[in-house]
Amino acid sequence: MPSASRPLNVLWLIDHVCWDGSLHGGGRLFYNLLPAFDPNRVVAFPYFLRASDEVRRVFASAPVPVTVLDKGRYDPTTLSALLRICRRHSIDVMHLFCYASSTFGRTAGAMLRIPTVIHDFDTQIYFPYPLYLRVADRLLASGTGRAIAASPMCRAYMRDVRRVPADRIELMAHAVPDEKFTASQTRDEARTALGWDPGVTVFCAVTKLGPDRGNETLLRAFARLRETHPLARLVIVYKPTYYHRVPKSYATIPWIHDTAAMREQIQKLAEELGITRSVLLVESLDHPDSYVTASDVVIVPFEDERFSSVHLLESCARGRPAIATDLGEQRELVEHEISGLLVPPRDEAALAAAMARLMEDASLRARLGEGAAARAREFRVGSVASRLADLYERLVADRGHAPPRARGAAC
Image (cartoon, rainbow, N blue to C red; front, side, top):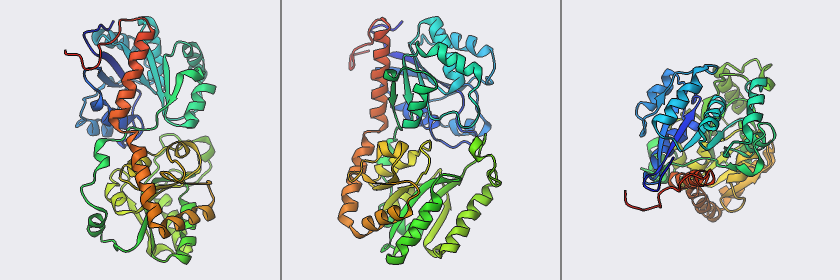
């Protein structure tokens, strides 16, 4: 039980982060957000249930060390391990990411009377929603202290499928590291380093290749733009999508596991549209900063609301206005005519018109860029960490424990 003399001890537990070592979703929060907590308010204890070798290598240099429990999805010893961890660290709140963590964690929380927060980044698109999880979610939903959804679609899923009461769910898109707000190079310096013409307007998409990402619509829109604006350039900073499990709707796509074919299709379309010399494909999704810095406008052309892009806010942090499709996370993050422009998904004419508008109006680009930077500051790691600390303190107070120590009080 917390007392007025110490900060809250919070268990952060996730099933696993991306197997290939990419940092997105929960992985980024563990890496970037944990160091931002005020130690006078929150002491976090981070754990992975399991991790691939690639993830272990990435987190070997993490600012806050993470312990890997090496527990499989169905390992019945997970519950007893969590009970021991909670007692060892005198845990006051459990912040639980993904299914196994939220199932075992909420069960442990109910047994020890510890408030729980569950946090989701996706819906059940990669594997069926099994009966045992459905039953567990229904039994545990009413005792869930709070739920955090990474996107509007995820929020609806937590409410309608996982049965968490709607008034306990809040949206938290991403947390932007402080270093994303400063660049080691100016736009022109970055262009010189990349060998880009300083006089052209560059549109940049930081994305993955694969179905519903909108890259084909983007190429067709860019081809339209080039008919009237020959100085436009497009760079797609990408990574192929490596499916750990293939969504059912993609199961019949013959190239769904062929990452080389994903790139070949994009290249072939660019050739057919006659824009190859004006389009640059760069496989550098994990290190896109120099390309964003050298660009003028960022484009997020997703055609499915389940997709989420941390790179959207990180590009906004660099003062780059966004053109994004009007759905899902983009609709929540991009304020139309304030921090960017929203266009209908799969509408190449509307996308081309938005690109032309920003290319022709430098003052509009500058105004939207300032708005984008202001919007990104709302998601700075320090702001998000403070918001979470507020949440943890409310949960502890609501549970009837002693109030946490006042902010700024001496240790």
